[in-house]
Length: 250
View 1 (tube, rainbow, N blue to C red):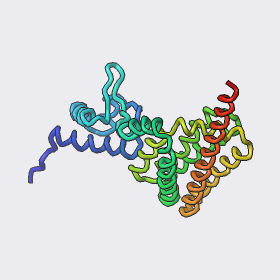
View 2: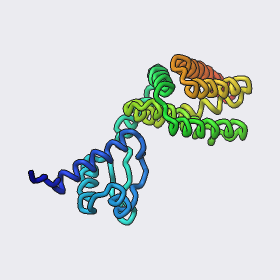
View 3: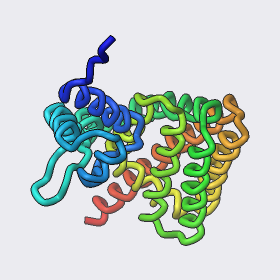
View 4: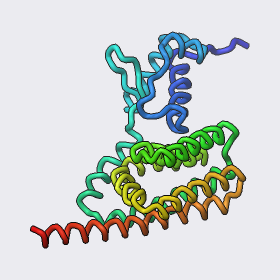
């Protein structure tokens, strides 16, 4: 029986699905540049015309963007379509912050539980590296670095859940609330006791995920979010008192 050779379009469809899967699982992230056409074609063992066709399919979907003289990069469409309108809404309606924290409580708690059950050796290496970077940031007292490493640690946990929706929603959520995370860390840094509590909470999440203790990981994550929620309430009260005092002064 004669074997039917795959057509160029059929090969392109297969390669497009492969690249799309990499984007969904987070191995290709927003801003990542694809390897050169030659390198990627060799890696996938396909012709360059088939690769070009596959890339064009994802460009049309908005998942890839070809830049003149700059190669092909992964877009942030999966995150931006969620985060952009919510960022504007959160600024206009501060009470939405409570809803966001409730959502984060559910999402990150489940992410930690699943990560404890599903994390591979590669995931754990990434989580270990993220936690080590976070610990180093705490020691340096560099708030900007603390913010970045805090976000990276929670994202590593979310990705280790091996749930594509959780991974992308976690990334989108952190884009939405990045400014609030920054303000909160500045507030907590000014209170040494609470700063150490925050550090201990991250360690508890790390240890429970590493120890494959799924229920403990979920509980540690949710206790962390409850602490963040309370500290943000306190920070808002402090800011309100400060503004009130300034108004009286003027």
